[in-house]
Image (tube, rainbow, N blue to C red; front, side, top):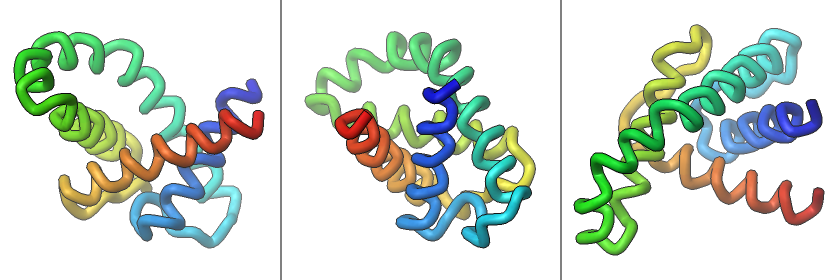
Length: 112
């Protein structure tokens, strides 16, 4: 359960830093949306992302791993599409959000 709480906190922090995602007013609705988004993103990352990463492996190798940023952005955009109340205005912002979310998750993991 702590894992999901860390992920929810990471989504809230990444939303605050990038100014996308859930509106940062720290209400129950905001926390619930971030929690649902964290669950949906975890499900997507454990089911769909490995297949997409396998398909795009040649492109990822050609770009020395930079294309994985596009794959992460696609997963965030898909999760934002599926979760009502979580809005990301463009695909570029989805890639930025994915990058910030990765950094925040890493920082939270270090202090865990």
